Length: 314
Image (cartoon, rainbow, N blue to C red; front, side):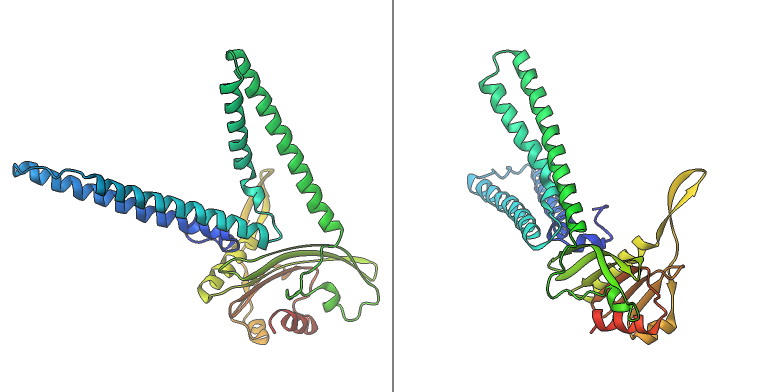
């Protein structure tokens, strides 16, 4: 509960994040209801004892009802978890399956070792051997899968990951109208869907503009409700306000307050607008749309402002 509330904007971006956020309050309600039921039962029991009345006998019918309710609740939670996991696997470019991979691998390895130890091990020495082989196998598999995932991510970046249709994006090519030679060097684009944020993405691009390398990175969130749009804006703004600083040769993260520019806000005709101190990153909210942009961009230039508004808010 402490890790999920206040609600984090990152938890709104995936079905698994929403599941983790809301399953604990649901469990708290269920456990409180069970506790209340037991307390009432104990209170009535003590009252009957004091009055020298017979105790109410537990019946098989009531026991079956309680068992059925518990089973339905447990199966509902498990089924919801599976649906959330499968949804994220198929509807996001970030493979959330890697988040549960260690648990799946651990449970699978444990069951396999348990089988061999029970069925094949003749003495304690054999059991230890199976455990050692199992642990070494897990380490090897984790390293192989991790290496393949890192390689795949790097390949996608170098290979200029494509931008899916229907995702509004502003690039360095769009905001450099006077550039003569514009070439995309690399791009990373990750997108996703959730019940609360129907469309979002994070991207990073490196361009060669007239012989100079220029970078742009950004995030786009199309949120279903103003309340969650505000959470997304505040959460993302807080994350970009944290800057690394060195204190006594040790790295620390400190919050650098973002700047409100009322004039730019009125010119852009948006609900909220914040800039970093160096004016190299911007947070904008218009309605249920939240945008973050940073990089080699002059946000004060009129043409740049017009292109960003045209591409992302129209």
